[in-house]
Amino acid sequence: MPYPKIIIYNEELEVVTQPSDVDDFLYGMNKDTQAQVTMLDNDGSYHTLDGEPCQALCSEQLTHYVKQYLANEGHCCLSKIEQLTAQQAFNLVVID
Image (cartoon, rainbow, N blue to C red; front, side, top):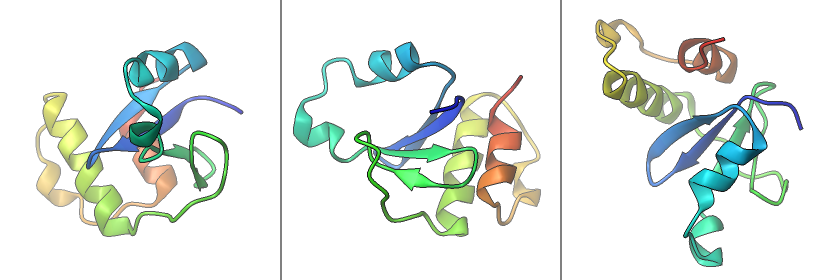
């Protein structure tokens, strides 16, 4: 599975660039908690940690989480962002 990926958990998102980042994120989580983790690939597919397809976020939810992530990273002028596709979300949060 190619990286980077976006992890969505507890109404927030995290960017992971390699498998060890996923391991670090999951450290200390029990199986029930891990079952609540959703991953978004840069091709727009949503899946569980086990690779099973799962419910996609609507663009409004994804936009909210991306804006929250960017605000936490110190970005401003986020009010102009209204709706994002998965690819647009990756373009905004993944710095190459």
